[in-house]
Image (cartoon, rainbow, N blue to C red; front, side, top):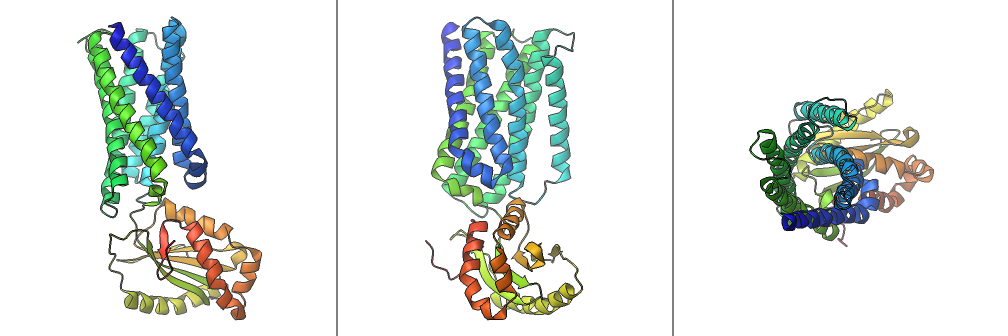
Length: 376
């Protein structure tokens, strides 16, 4: 059995290195672009270090310390599952649906409370049984979270059926399968089918480590090679408009997502007519000092973002709204300098605004292209 144990240790070590690699290679960009993915990356590093620590301590015959590390390992994994769920839900909508968010929060809370009770030795039951239950519950939670992530990829693939998205989906499937396999390994122990650390359990855990190692490996390579894929949002954006504080339209451009394979069937004539009528309405609204946030029609969504010092309003015409668009609106507002605010109120400076605003839009919305603008 020692040979199989060595293989499992090597698998854990390889997984730890992959987790650390993912953290180091992606931290800088993720801190800027997604707080949830940043949290995921940080906890991947913690998870890998704790797993390696538990293995090294076990090899050094420091059994008590190794068990302590095993009790701590579930905490970063739970955070990985929850932050991963929140990150992927951000592709579809501004806020997750309550129908999935509430069970995820409840599951996270119950897991944390149970893990704390085991860590602090509050329970008087058999320590091996309570620790096994920790990993059963952990595996169930991991399986559910990765299933929800998998559903998001189904939507994204309907817009971007490309290799990098399919690879990311495969990574999610493998890590989810690893969570489910871990659940099986410790469930069988609780049912008395075999004892803790028996040859049968080691084989199942070895299979789980293969799933997880390959899944994380695919994720790391994919993110390194196709970093832009995190901007593959499945919500079309059709037009961006900017009005100054007087309700005068100072910028209007048709835009599209960065894809050549999907036709959104945008009717520019109909959209232009609707925006022309809307412009008059918008002037009246601004005149009353009322601030709009969101208008939803049967086909389009209009999202409004007030610019600094009430110098104007940014309007996004899209087929929906998600956390990426919401974050881009905030980025855009931060890039509007006092000089630009002054130029927006001066009709003689309108012509000089377009190239500047084009660059700010491309920077703030890295997942779109301005139609007619030469691609780099």
